[in-house]
Image (tube, rainbow, N blue to C red; front, side, top):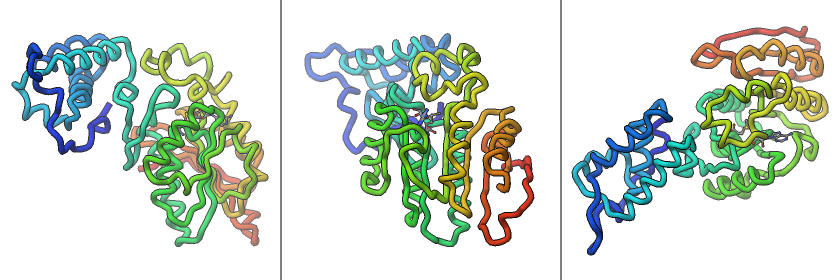
Length: 326
Ligand SMILES: C[S@@+](CC[C@H](N)C(=O)[O-])C[C@H]1O[C@@H](n2cnc3c(N)ncnc32)[C@H](O)[C@@H]1O
C-alpha cells in the first residue's frame, strides 16, 4: 500500500465532509480515522494508511488534506459510505479495488476485480523495456505486452516511446475491457492495438520487443497467498500451473517465430524460477543472450532473452548471466 492510492487534487470542497442541513453531524475526521484504523488492525499491515486512503477517497480529498479538516464533522452520507468501505476492507478487499485505482510507474490506472492490481515489482520490467528501447536511438519498432491485464505495461510503452507500435493481448475478455478503459483514460485508444487472445497465437510477428508478466505462481502455492490476493484477484492472473511456468513455457515456444532479429523478450518471474526459465529460453532460442535481473530486494525478477542481429553475431555462444539490477 502506498501513496499511489491518493487522489489527485480536488478543486471543489468535499461535499460530504460537512453535514448538510437537517443531517445529524457525525464523528470528526480525526475520530472516524481512529475508529477505522482500529477496526483494520486484524486485516491490514497498514491500517492507518488504509483508513486515510479510504476516507480521502470518500471525501474526494488528498490524504494530506484530511489533516486540514481534522476536527470537521462528517455528514451522515460520508459516514455511511466510509463505514461500508471499511467493512469491505475488514473482509480483505484490497484498497486499490475499493478506490478503483492504482498508480503504476508514472500513471494512474483504473482497476477492479477483473484485473490483477499492478505491482511495484513489475516496474522493473517497464524500466528494462524503456532502457532497451531508448538505446535503439529512436528507430521504430513493434512491441507486445502479453497478459496485459489493466493495460499497465502497454500504456507505459505507448506513453514513453512515441516511435513504438504497441500491441496488448489478454486471454480474459473482462481484463481486455478494463485495459480498454485505461487506454481511453490515457488517450491511447488509437495508439495501442488491444487483442483478446491466447498468448501470441492471434498475432503475427515479428516483434522487436515481447514483454510479459504472465501468471507464475505454482498452483499448490496459491493457498498460501493472503486473503487479499486469493479471494479477490483473478485466478487466471495468478495460477501458473504445476511449477508456475506453464504460460511462460508456452510463450517461449511461440517466440522463435515471432521475435525479430535483433529482438528482446522480457519476462517477469518469481524468485527461484530464473534457472528453469533460462533453460527453457535456451531450448527455444539457443543463440540468444539470456540474463536474469534481480529487483531492489535482491530477488530474481526478470528474465531477459536478447536475440542479436543475424550478421555474424547470430553465432554468439549461448550464455547465461545472473546480474544485479542495482
Ligand atoms: C500476472 S497478470 C499481469 C497483468 C499486467 N500485465 C500487470 O503486470 O499488472 C497476468 C495476466 O495474464 C493474463 N493471461 C493468463 N493466461 C493468458 C494467456 N494464455 N494468454 C494471454 N493472457 C493470459 C491474465 O488474464 C492476466 O491479466
